[in-house]
Length: 457
Image (cartoon, rainbow, N blue to C red; front, side):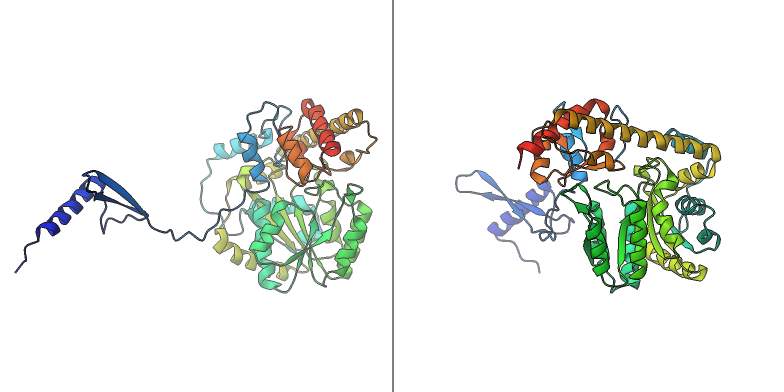
């Protein structure tokens, strides 16, 4: 027999029904996060109370801004007409606008005309791209290619290629350490930390000369445990723009071979640094010619301007074809749970450009033009610094560096002054991207550098 509700209970039920009608919700409405309640005070007024339930993500802290990409975010928020973004390494025209290479437009037009589909690629990527990228890196006539000793996987630009290699090192060389230059590209340490691969630094930059500390570099690589992986920048070292000379590369190869280390090249600027694809790959080819096994990560963000396509490759040069087959099989096994298979659009652009003699020639011309513009800007900045600075400081390191970056020698406080006073955005280690500079802004930048160097401790 159902029992009748007392007057107060009936009133409470009615009030609850009214709340659901007005505000929605209830025990089974699937909502989470907060609940609204209504309480009647003695005064007759209605008060609303908000109860917030604790999130399961309470223990997740706010991540700090990315030291490189965060520069662009700050730049966009600045309303000054004088502002200049020299933080991110992306090529700009003389009008400081992003550029799509003409040869890329031609390749994309060809792809549209063919009406190709969007089917999944194999785990290792687009076969024509893999062949083209290995040929470009090592030379099509290189014996290691003809002998089938190169394991190549298309991957997600330079970062993805490095990350895949790091996972391989962690799985098959768990006791090995990676040696990283000091300083290096800001994401290198993140990649190896995330893969749980231990690393240490070797000396590279000499602040006294704003040049290469080659003796320190040799000493640290010599002192490293035998069988370490030595991460080297194939050309246009990021962030310093300082590369070893050909003679110094020979000595490094001698030492790495003697110590049974594994050379691991990051090649992000082939053809973009000097304007020559062959010259910019000479360091890698030297080590391969010695018969060493070598890791090489490649990116086409800079030299083809395919920043958003995330197109690159990881190459492992091995001693024998059967070794390369085993290495490739395990790289594929690692890639499968990471991203399954890579995107096709950028891979087809590269394959079309490299595989067509006419487009390949046009690409080389456009690369020379990009490299030439940066060289002109570098020269103009040096001329402006030497003309304006009466202190006698030697600014010639600007000219001895190569590629899109210049390491100014400014410290963190001085770099802050560049931004706070002069509206020039750059990374806090003193690196500037000359790809984001034009001839018209060189004198303004020179004024800012001179002020920050001499007047800020």
